[in-house]
Length: 122
Image 1 (cartoon, rainbow, N blue to C red):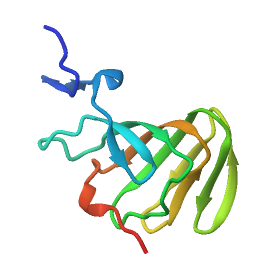
Image 2: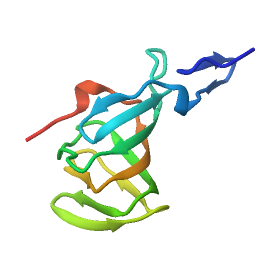
Image 3: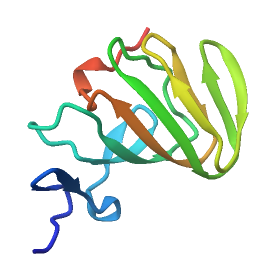
């Protein structure tokens, strides 16, 4: 059985091929959202290409884990600038206003699964 680009449900697991998932615009740049299917409410995984003009935003329900894959820059977390480089990981709790600064490629793991209705801007 071959896996589709988005996700394939097979018994007790899902499989996704992130480089085959179409990129969609997001406040940070462009995101490829794996496991983003209606029946999955647990968690998703996103391959995100951060643009230099990422918007400050927050989530009321989501916790996010960022893992920097490529590039160097900063994360703005509740107004504080934290330097980041490859293999820096950040745990972002609900309510934390955040954005990435710099051209970066990251993995983002939202928990529970990403919900576009839970993106908030001041």
